[in-house]
Image (cartoon, rainbow, N blue to C red; front, top):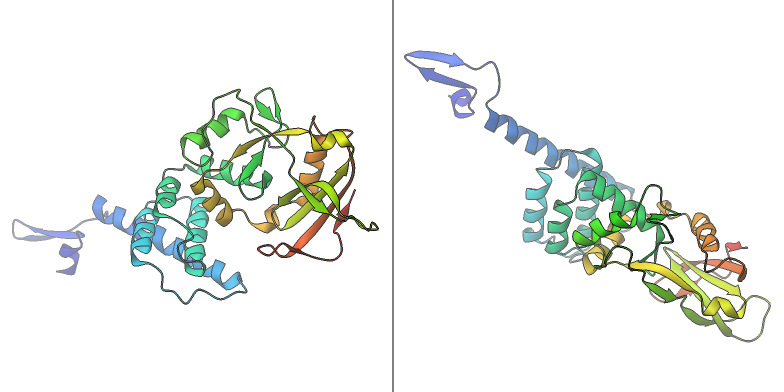
Amino acid sequence: CNLIENGLAEYKNGEFIQHDSLPLSLATKMEEEENLYSTLKKSFDFCQSRHDTPSEEPLSQTFFNNWRDRVRLISEDELRSVWAQILVCEVYNPNAVSLKSLEILSTLSKKEALLFNNICKSVVFDNAIIFDRVGNNSVYFDNISEFDLLDLSDLGLIKSFQPNQLIHDNIPLCNWTPLGEDKAREICHYQYGDYCIFIDGDNDLKSSKVQFRQLTKHGRELYSILSQPEERDVYKFIDYFMSLKSIKGKVTNIYAFKYLDKAKQILESNYLIKR
C-alpha cells in the first residue's frame, strides 16, 4: 500500500506492478527535499562558526515559509550557501532581510549572485561601489563591465543609471588629528568594511572626484549579509584607490584603523597601515 501511495507501484488488471524508476513528481519532491536539507545543514554550519548568540526573538514563520519555498528550488551549491547565510542573518538579526529582498535574490542566477558578491569587495560606507572605468570595463574587477552593473541595476540591487553615464562625487571629508599632530584638520576618509581609512594629501585631493554606483535598499541588505570581512582585502582596496586617475600623485599618506565599535565610530588606537 505504501508503494502505491508513494507512486512506486500500481495495481492494474488484477496484478501488482512495481515501477523500476521513480515517477517524475516523486523525483522532483525528493530533489526539493534534498535542496532544503543541504541548505539547512549549511545554515547550521554557519551558526556553529559564529561566536555571538542568536536573537531571543523567534524567527518569523512568514519569513521562513518564503525562504523554504524558494530554497527547495536551489540546486547549485554556491547559491545554497547564499541562502543559508540569509537564514542565519535573520535568526541572529530579526527583520534584517525583507521579503522583497528574498524575491530579488530568488531571481538571481548563479552568475549574477557571484557577480554581486564580487563587486561587494569595493563597497564603501556600506552603500556605494567605487567603479574606476576604462572604456566599459573596470580596472579593479576582473571581467566586470559597466553593462554587468546595468544588469544588477535591472535586478534592483544597484540604483538605476544609463550606460556611459558617469556618476562622480568628492571624497568625503572629516576632522581628524593625524598621528604626531596637536590640532584636528580636515582630511579625506572612507569607511571600508571594518576599517576607517584616512587619506592625507595636497589641496587638490579634497576636490578630486571618483566614479561610483549606489546600492539600493535591497542591495545594501544583501551586501551586509553576503560580504564577508575576510573577503574584503583592505590592502588591495588601498592599492586600487591609489591607482585611480583622479587620485594619482595627490596622496602623501594613508592610515587604516580597524573599528573597535563601528556603530559608535570607535577606532583602535594604533593604525594598521601607513603608506
